[in-house]
Image 1 (cartoon, one colour):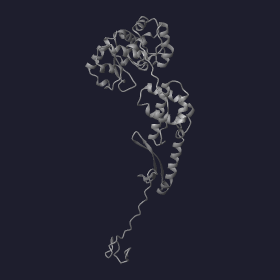
Image 2: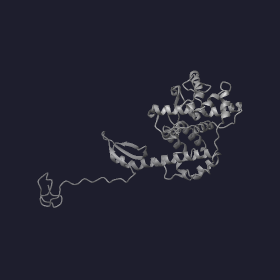
Image 3: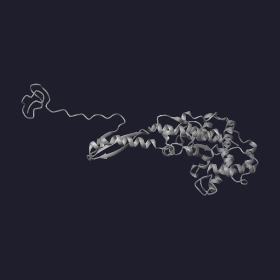
Image 4: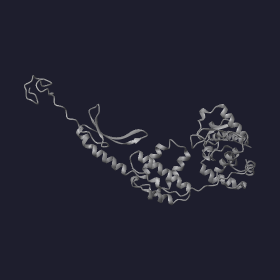
Amino acid sequence: MQCRKCKTELPDGAAYCYVCGIKQEKPQKRTKARGNGTGTVYQLPNGKYVAEVTLGYLNGKRRKKTKQFAKKSDAINFLPLLKQQIDTMDSKITFTDLYERFMEKHSEKVGKSTIDCYKAAYGHYKPIYFMPFSEIKTEHLQHCIDSVPGSRTKENMKALGTLLYKYAMQNDLIQKNYAQFIYVGKKEKSKREAFSAEEIQIIKNNIGKIRYSEYILCLIYTGFRPNELFALKKSDYHKNYFIGGSKTEAGRNRIVPIPDPIAEIVADLVNKSESEYIFESPAHKQFSDEKFRKRYYYFALNEMGIRKLPPYSCRHTYATMLKDIDAPITDKQKLMGHESFEMTAHYTHTDIDSLIRIAKQLV
């Protein structure tokens, strides 16, 4: 054999030339690296080649699209087509498509009342349901928001829009958050009113006479939101207190003592309930807070001659009564579920006894 450089005669199989020192084995050509975002090709143990393109990242995990080929060259040649397919697919995702994908992931992280707010807000975006999300701009969102009354509804719509844009950006579907430019107007400060002592007494006097007056009284003496009260199961009842709540980490699974004015009422409801729910509906199912409000709550107040304050006023009444009790503010916050507080498993007997002592002072 001859040296590949100086042509000196060498023994067969020589690794280097003893004259010029050059290595006789030709270096293999390095495969040209592809640019970022263009995809990659690799070989499987079965000998096939895979063309792979990264879609993005969701919850820290890489999302990808792949296709297998028998030849490496075919996989390499298909990469641009695979990337084009993905870009086309993402550009066609509609507002509704994205909302459904978002809800599938996000609904596990929040309470039912929050999900209900999202669903209600989504309903007002009907004009842009089938628009490609990448084509939606602030003016489209603003038009939907301007067409609905009520500042709270508009705020919920903006909140949902912001979450959808954040989700889309996390998955590389868009580059800009147009929801941040939505204007919902000045926030209207609503004056919350509490039921008076006289009105509470009227409710007490009508227990057993006016249907669901006992539910209203229990809302007042527990501070539960309606959806929280109606979610209580018999397994949440522990004679002197409930374990329930929702909405925030502090609100979920909190200890809520049962004051004396409703102790017998609650015990009676537990015994008479024909379902797993304590405050069941006429059909012996979980009560819908919307149905309760529209069909029974205001009707009962009207029958008793009491002001038609909204259901949230029951919770506000509870907070007002707590203000008049001499107890640590932290304990009161625990009762309302407002403070970032440890979950049920971390309540001590001292905590529970302290909260029950406060509730005993509610008359």
